[in-house]
Amino acid sequence: MDSAIFKILGLTPQRETEIKKFILIFYCIGITGMLIPYTFPFFKTLTPYALLLMAVLLAAYHRGKANVRSLIIFSAILLLGFVTEAIGVNKGILFGRYNYGKGLGLKVLNTPVIIGLNWWLLTYVTASIFENYKIKSLYKIIFASISMLAYDIILEQIAPKLDLWYWENNRIPLKNYVAWLIIAIIFQLFIRIFRINTLNNLSVYIYFSQFVFFIVLLFFLK
Image 1 (cartoon, rainbow, N blue to C red):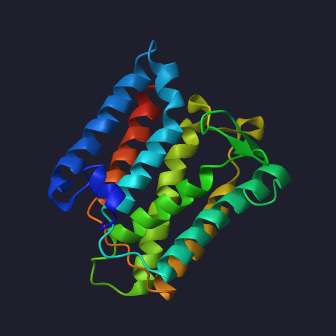
Image 2: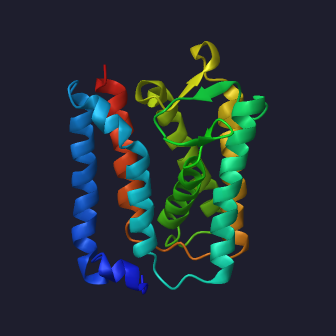
């Protein structure tokens, strides 16, 4: 948060409360835009940009200075997230057989470039939510990983409607959820083993805003 570029953008500590309100309003507008048939196509194209925006906000309000160790671990999660998805979509051996639509933007190896960022963001915010709880690291890993899985369970149901990805025969295999949980645990282990600081007051706002966003769309999007 000491970076000059964030200060130039106006993302200062004094504006944290405003940013929290912005996140809530942002997703409320997103829900409205998605549920109106006329604006749905436009809002659907904003998905990767919304993900980028949330990542920037998290980086801006990360508590403490980034160090080489955290940058390496965060980069590893981002890269491994992309690699596992690339293997999964091209080989069908991790999650099952599926293919990506156009909803997440530019693709390399049939895989959206931004998907690795999604894995990092979800790993970061869930780890961050449980960071302040005075419980054993094992429980933090378990609860954060389950939170990641819960997020995926909801997202999988709405993904085809947003042109994110499609499952073969429109059936989500059980091994998708098993693989998601295993990968989530591995990434959370990275955070705890290497003692990565994930304290961030925006994390809970971003996680639950996205969670509610997808639940509302699941029930009301035609």
